[in-house]
Image (tube, rainbow, N blue to C red; front, side, top):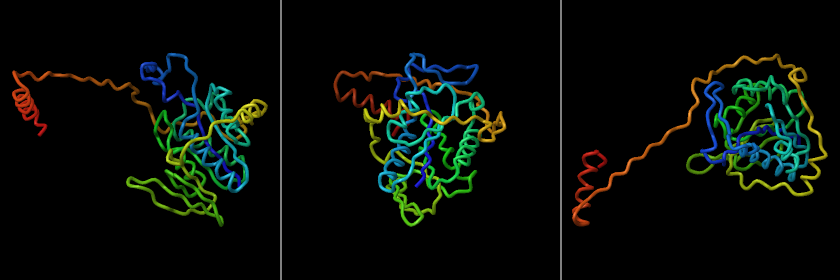
Length: 262
């Protein structure tokens, strides 16, 4: 079984909000404390799902990542976890793409790979929460798509997927090849072993340029960033006074009624 997993490098979503600022000119979020980027956590869940299928079914796991200013230790974590190959799409032409451009580039790279049985992505990216990449790739390649998978089982040319819904999960089957987006409900992501880390250091990613995948650059944007900002939350506290607890409770009740809160 050939499984393709799409991941991306992002600003650490666990970093405190105080280290972020918005570049008004470029409309980008910046991490000001110099902490390194990380693999998108949802992409790690997708990779975990692929590695579990490989352990059960055999086959090959190929990771594709696209962008600029990639940090080797970050993207090579996929190899340290157990992926067999890393496709690195790092070029200025891949910078500042919207969802359409990302889907277009990844789809061309997947076509170049040739045969595949399953394409996995995270349910969404932690930096945009767009949730468009998986469905977009499916639409572009003409494949069926299942979103929000918490468990994937393969058999008889189809995938049986437990898909997260509001009050539990539903089970659906889909013929292969297919695109499946993986949710965090799939379970804990494995840590790279020391053996895996050492092996990953010796492995060289396969590099795809726009020319390699037949992509005309630049890809026209289908969306426009109007504004990017950090939400400002203000809180005000009013102390309810009274000569006794009973009087304070009565005063509080009057304030709540005046505010039409009950």
